[in-house]
Length: 153
Image (cartoon, rainbow, N blue to C red; front, side, top):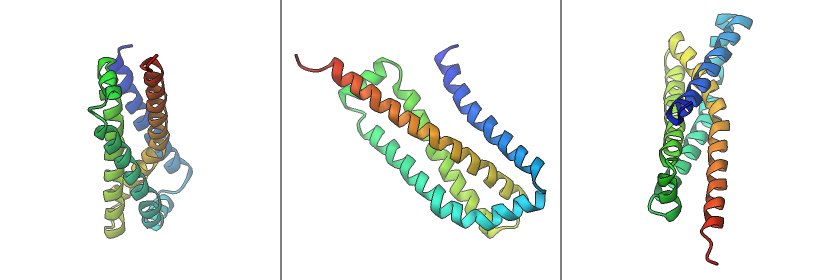
């Protein structure tokens, strides 16, 4: 499998998993109860999860980008890994921005479609927490490897 296809597959798996969880929720629970739950919890999810994760993902993305002139990041470019990590952080930022906006809309509209979208984005955001932590950890391991390999003798 090519690198690009593998990276694309990672995003698709998150999207499919989120869709599956939402479909499962609507299969197990009554539609109106799920919508009621989304509406009742939207303020808490927005303030205690979505905004926090947006700040975290922005911080990680900015930290990664701010090191773009470092030897480590140049090495990532040579290994064709820079864009993979940049896209992963950017994807996380996008998920949490859209989640925050959708939750604000849920609090201020009566649209069931927006409530369903917010539920789906909340699940995607939860799944994406793992990806964000894993990508950060992998970058730390790569940085340690780079430092070991480029240590002055």
